[in-house]
Length: 254
Image 1 (tube, rainbow, N blue to C red):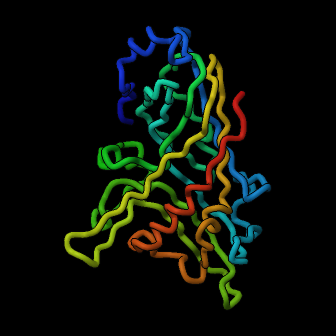
Image 2: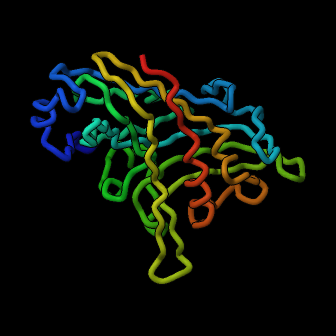
């Protein structure tokens, strides 16, 4: 796992000294993040996997057999627009009920933050480092598709237009078009803003992924057309990026 570091527009010591103006204090807080999942208003857990019980916006009936995704670079923005970044990542694995909670190793100055955010996937600087735990999880992207790592693997089966159960693999990576030379890339990681949050010791931030949104907004997803071989499909990756903007939401701060 890569080293956890603070990245500040101003130094960490300066942030602590200016606590009055940034609405933070000298008190350090241990925080955590919890990730839950839903299909619109229906909670989704491992127990709901491997059964065709969901219907997407197009009307396709489908199951979920695997859901893994990567989050990174949790960022706390003060009211002076100073950014405190926890340079850490977590591979959330819903299929195996692993890493549904994220406990950063470092403490955060207590106080009121203008915004808390995180990255879905890796930014480009992080994506091309070497992570032994992600390698062991078979999270790599083949070199012919640009290398680096997946952002998400969402897999299952759906009832196709011949009434046959057919597999789908909704895998999100950095978009690449190999039909041109040199290959064309487009960034498809994105930042999720959770809004203003007050941090104190023991704060837990509850975040929900609405899985249905991956197939819905703004692009109605037709699994009969886009079901597999999506990683080398530049246009499909851009559609996923667009749909992902509405997937995550802040549920509660406790």
